[in-house]
Image 1: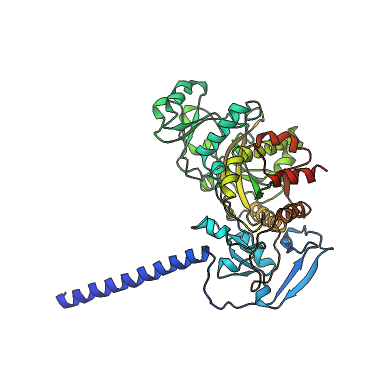
Image 2: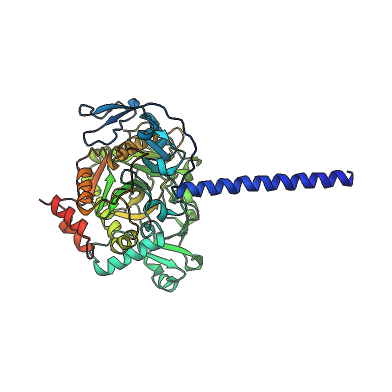
Length: 481
């Protein structure tokens, strides 16, 4: 090739590279600019919206008509929104969330600052600035400082602190050791259990998990937990994936969805050391098992079978097989409350440095993994931040469940129309914050079951909250009237 031609090609390549880098850099800048709620004066087309409102003025969502179980609409008012400034907008969202938004005509916003409801998978940058910029009508789906729940190591540390204070109440997690700091203690206690399960602290979907039965196999990093000898169904190990919804931290208010799903291993369970490296025997995550030979798609939401079933169908299975489902469910609810309360007091102080407009500006959904041992005692395995909500292909169970769960969620968090042009940000006072929490407790919850605070459990759990805030005390007083 002629030298001049070669030089020309190099120059063109460099020029193209610079242009691409500029475009990507500018796009990244815009992304973060969105997160800062600044926005640009770009024009966004608006389509007339026909929205249904509940008696408290919040937007009404109904289930997919294909589910054949619509929510009663007898007290619902239908309004037509013709002006762009009064429209209902969403920012972010994907999969079943976008489907729920689209079902009632919510329009996607170009910028976060214009959205009534925000659902982002990742926290993104400048979360503090975002929270401090929301007006009283906006709803955003991430709290800061909830790593104490969703980081495996931090969750165990906080649980262990509470276990030292309340050994009888905090007895629902497998014995665990953080590596490398707790290796000496792990080696000392290794023979207490036949098997141990070792997980990386920052990974999900079963990645990096090992089953070990020798101290020689202890890795340098991770968290090692006793292997819970499981209760078996269809000769397989199974776990529950359930969901917690926190709708405010001051005052603290959270729910557990009454449904969820049950995931099975793709092979029959055994603790034989010949199968110690076969994760298809030991791991339950569907995304790990879906390509395994023994994995089966369950096409019926209300039928309990391999390899993934609804929690609702598990309840029916229990009633037919003399298993005390109400007791199991009650214990799981108790576990979830105590887990959230494990380090709530210190985290709320960090959160309150952000001056949010409303105590209901922020909500968050967490995935909770629970197993049953061979005596049907529930154990908390982990809590997941930004849980995967993408339905598995060809899984009607996921399609039905996620549609119902997010329909219920957006009915509960309370999305209201407002004047996007003239609404000024203000900070709600104490009485207004208390009232918005009382209003939420009156809303249609669907499958979301309030697990704290309840009239019957405030006295039971308040001992775990050191120096409760004035808003917590006021809400508890109103609930207990």
